[in-house]
Amino acid sequence: VDQYAKFVVKSEVNGTVLGNLNGSLTLDESIADNGGLKTSFRAYHEYLKKYPSQYTEETGDKLFYLSFAQAWCSKHTDARLTASLLNSYPPNRFRVTGALQNNAEFARVFKCPTNSYLNPSNKCLLWE
Image 1: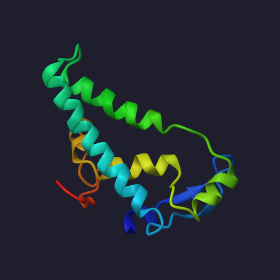
Image 2: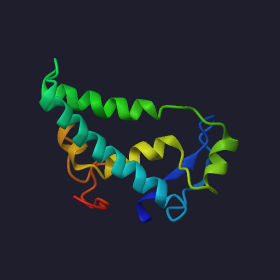
Image 3: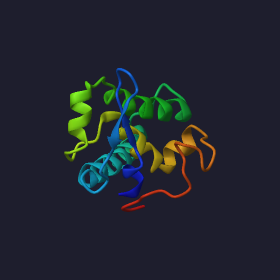
Image 4: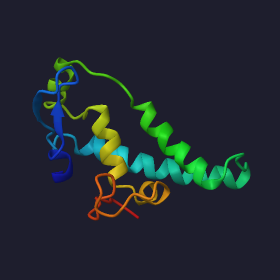
């Protein structure tokens, strides 16, 4: 809850601060995003056991995470961003950022230094 409440929502037009996310309000979606990313990465690796990739493991893993992020790529109006402060759906950029910050495999694959923006030492985990 605290992690997401620190996300500052800014206008994608002029950078004006619109407010902070409500971590309590977005909790269900955030849990789903975090769990979905972790589960789909594991499923991807199970798939690779049966159907080997043309890529090295490192390259395939990087493409997996890039595909996850790109699927959420979008541009929002100020009205949409302001509305997101009052509903359970965080803006897409924070759905990606929050899930990646809590994902140790992402940090390993991209060699993110500990305590960097995308690899905080304190991760929110529902299960290992």
